[in-house]
Amino acid sequence: MSQFPIKDDDRGAELSALYRAAAADAPPPALDAAILAAAHREAGARPRSLGFSFRRTARAALSIAAVLVLSVSLVTLMREEAPDAVSPSPEQGAPAAANEKSLTAEGNTDTRDARRADVQTPKSIGLKPSNSSPSTGLAMPRGPDFGERYAQRPSDKLTAKVESRTADQGSSMKRRDQFASAPLLPRGNSDLRAPEPQRQPAAAKEESAPAPAAARPPLPAETAKNKAPQGAVLGKLAESKTSAKPADADREADTSTRALKKDSVGKQMADAAPAAPPVSQLASPEAARSRAEPSAEPTPEKWLERIEELRKQGKLDEARASLAEFKKRYPDYRLPESLRDGIR
Amino acid sequence: MPPNPNPSDEELMERYRDGDAAAFDVLYGRHKGGVFRYLVRQCGNRGTAEELFQDVWMNLVRARLTYTVQAKFTTYLYRVAHNRLIDHYRAHAGGALASFDAADGPQLDEVPAARGADPAVQADVKQQAQRLLQLIDELPAAQREAFLLQQESDMSIEDIAQATGVSRETAKSRLRYAVVKLREGMQHLERA
Image (tube, rainbow over the protein chains, first blue to last red):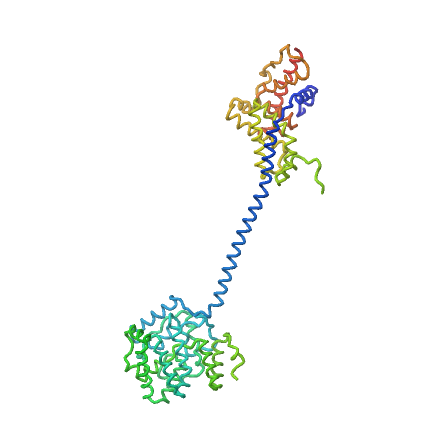
């Protein structure tokens, strides 16, 4: 059976022919024109729409890419500049200050241990950790205002020997001013030891970072007197203590105390530190020793300046030794041109 | 590769989908008459047919981006027309939908006799054509649609079934009833 019964027989074909003859209707030309115009309009609109969409997509992609590039550049730049910007965060400084307070309040803490509790890794302040062997447990302190101020004290430590020989009064006064501007730490009671602070493993590792002068072994008398590990500066102080007259130390302490009182910063600090020892204690040899005791090492910049100074003064051996110590301490630190080839 | 001088409907529609407006012109020229007549016969009003006709083509234009070749273009086109017509029936002529709901339509013996048994009707072709159109108008909508789809777009029963959304058997039955009625009506005219 066919699917087209009309066409398969004559009658069907006749019906089809008859229908086609009758069906001559067509849409009006106006309707044709309207439909064709609309169809053309739609066909023309599509590419424009696609093009606009493409442009918009490209614009959005470019914007995102630009933001990403800027962000990455900023982060990279900040990371590169981070070592230069020694600006510890309040969170980092707060524990140190809190530790200071607690140690002061207890009043039975060893100054050295208190300072050791403050130790911070050089890396955390933008310096690379030392690779040298741990010996003293002294490292760069850190905290708001502490870093810069403490950084002055090891400078004194390095130059104490030189200054004591040259008896440069101006330099001594400057040093005392710097010292007076240093934050107050519990002084005296140096024989009393604070409980060993709990340290993080990283902190313990950092603590083992030696001071620049740590290569020199401490004096036997010093080790016998102090159980806590001490820096070489302490040894230097012990040397000066044994060689210098006690009166000199007293005089220096008195001068230091006067400078402390004159100095506004020192005055503020004195006011803010109820546990500050009396002048008599500062004047004592013990106080002088603990005061001059290094709690930190200089910043690399200060250290290098000191080496330059030594070189200019013609003390090449000391400058070389100090530079060698510096290289041990900061093996990755980029030396200035003048020191890169050594001391000549 | 040179363009096909006689592209198929499907090819033209794809070209139009891709932005070739001229392809639509060709496509429209091929099918505008058949669709228009289909609509005129189905709705019985020329003005309404023109409105539906425009809607059908505009629907086609708007849906061009989603067009894919899944069947003959004529099937697709008349499916659009059929749907638009059903919408029209629902809105204005609900009675016409009854014939679409009937599965196979009335029995052959229920087909009314053609009214063309007027002896005064002249037997020339023109009159026969007019009589045929009259008979077509008297067919139920579903049967008329099947007949018109076959005549206007040369669809097979399968294509008619696909375009109207019914089974092949239903489409075949509708077409069969339509032809029988028309044949009887024309025979009656000849006898007269």
